[in-house]
Image 1 (cartoon, helix red, strand yellow):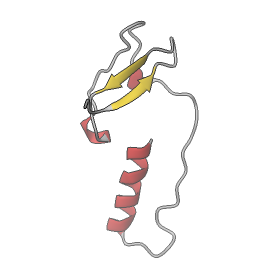
Image 2 (cartoon, helix red, strand yellow):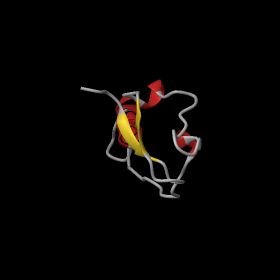
Image 3 (cartoon, helix red, strand yellow):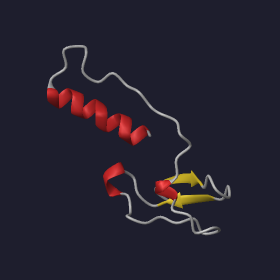
Image 4 (cartoon, one colour):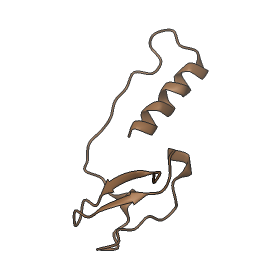
Amino acid sequence: MPTGQMRKCLHCGLETRLEFTEFRDRHVSCTCLKCDDELLEQSDGSIITRDIAHQQETVQQALIKMDDVLQQA
């Protein structure tokens, strides 16, 4: 089974599998096979907000929560 995630190009709509499993493992350059646009530089303008440190978490717990949000994004 292939690893990675599917990413839809916001310019042309082609879906491409990105071959990394964690945010830190992403490639410097991932271009769309159809239009050569940089997939990881595209943005739809949406913003994700999560409260990671207002329930008396330690710094380590807040960093773990932040890492989880980055993985989901």
